[in-house]
Length: 75
Image (cartoon, rainbow, N blue to C red; front, top):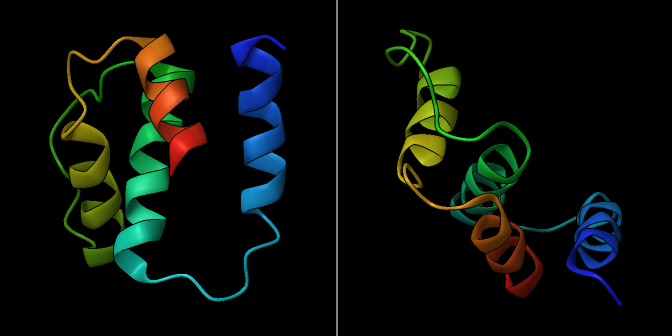
């Protein structure tokens, strides 16, 4: 099975999680954004939630799309 199919399955499964810590949510968000959009652009917004998401995404700067997909699958 290709990593793209596994990634899509992992994304679908992640949507069903009901109890996940905020840190795990941010970890998944960062990997998802890196896998789908590449490196984060611009500066972090002022709103606390948006800033946390941007920071989680920015931590993966330079990571390849394939590596981000793999890490998302393994979380």
